[in-house]
Length: 79
Image (cartoon, rainbow, N blue to C red):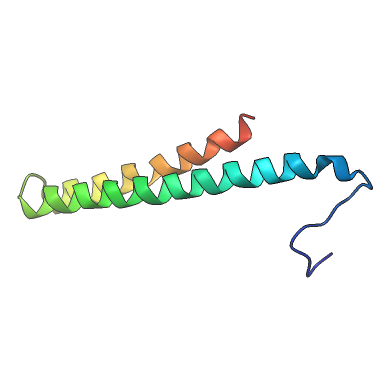
C-alpha cells in the first residue's frame, strides 16, 4: 500500500470510474491554480514596475493574493 499509486480499500471495482472522475477534476483544479497564480504574479509585477504600488503595497498584494489559489482548491471539498 505504501508504494502503490492507488490503494483500493474495498473489493468493489465499480468505483474505479468515480476515482478517474475525481482525479481528472483534481488535475483541472491544479492547472487552474497554476494559471491563476501566474496571472496574479504577472499583474503584481506590472503594478510594481509601473510604480503603481510601492514595496509595502507589493508585500500586502503578495500576501493577500496567496489565498486565491487556496480558495479555488477548496472547491474540491464541495463535491
